[in-house]
Image 1 (cartoon, helix red, strand yellow):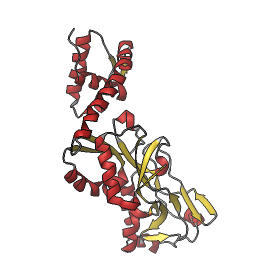
Image 2 (image 1 turned 90 degrees about the vertical axis):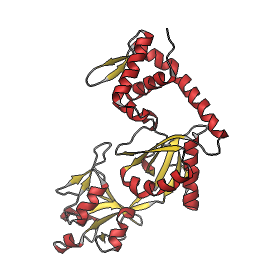
Image 3 (image 1 turned 120 degrees about the horizontal axis):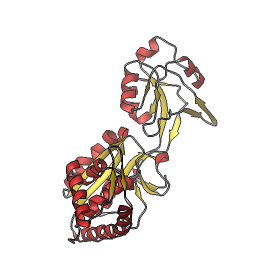
Image 4 (image 1 turned 45 degrees about the horizontal axis):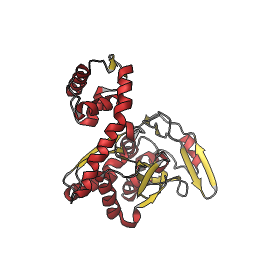
Length: 306
């Protein structure tokens, strides 16, 4: 029997990890037909079926599960061995995959890309804009960018944006037709645009604090969305009141396009973090990116626990 090669085993592990040929192809940078052909060639080489396939699911057979258990530590050790060579290079090389929550992809990460790629031209950077709370390991991602309270506690984190406030805003056009709220409870009389989280479908609560006072308002309205940029557009167009991160709307407030309502009342967030699994030695491309971000942000970048 001809021995399987690294590419075949790596593709097998990716399909098993994702339970999907399509998602495995995305991780590996391969077309779906190529992944399918690779797995078929491996099965023919071994003389056993590794996956049970239907139109809706992909599951390991007993033989596939046995093979996965045996090759996973071998592939991990091989990846570590290949990664160790990076320490002998003047500049690291390899692929770096980062999952970024949608609102922060263009606002926080995109401005870093040109300078990072100029400084590290041999690193292939892939930014995965995510709407869900993706498991980094299962998704084959090296790191992620999220709001602090959404980061798992066993992750190593680096703050890349300071704590911020959630504030209520509306357009001047909207306020021409109704009186601005004076207290959080007054929002009950307004058309509030609610937001569902893409990862769970739960409505984001409207929480307000002022000193020791804290309240949650169960707002109502004719529109519900699950995207921050769509929410901002609708608020700017006078559809209703929005509850948004202050950094995302500060320029619109300063320009007079939006009005900050209920000044003194706001919800607090812990900031935005770059995070990655806590392990002994992050891969060289990730180390380079972390060092780059720390240098760019200076004292604003602080290692912390989310």
